Length: 258
Image 1 (cartoon, rainbow, N blue to C red):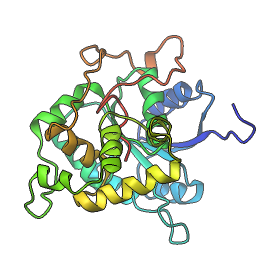
Image 2: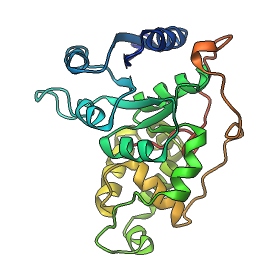
Image 3: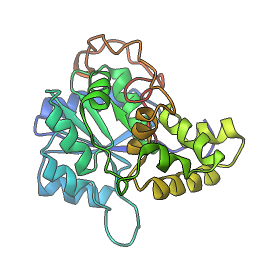
């Protein structure tokens, strides 16, 4: 830990008191995560989010509420939208796709393990995306969520990238965070962020999850399989000893940086 270390601030939004209590307890074991608020779904949740400005919000709600929650908080702070992780009891394809379109950057089953819960919060707080392992392959194989870049083929679109931008895109598609990409390429974090902005502009994509999927579908990289993808997680409400690992699971090795 450095002297200027500060914990990620998280808000819980769920209509079930016991669920919120269980997730608060599970997240409370992580030294770098602080739950700053928990509330039921509704206007009060939006007001609390505006007041507390958490980096991450875990929420179980309909897509329209997620869309409102994913909007930037206030007009004075550009880009101050929180990272949304959708909590659900049912891994329905329609809910997954609708949540992503609404602005969510994470999708997690309520039965997820404590390790997965903490990893999801850390990934989204760090600007990444997180999908539970059971949804990863279904998203890649069954959905066509990439908006067509003016009818250009993936190959033509990717050819517009510089060699360095292609390296950054490969890092994104393999689940690397901004800092990990910067370390691997021996460049600054600001340089990586600049490359990411140019990649999204050139590929005409809304976020880095879509860029990662384009890279995977085009064959530029192949998503690694999670060794835990076929296992049924225990869930934070019934978890045993807490894990503080940064374990990787989910879409493109758990962290497709957005």
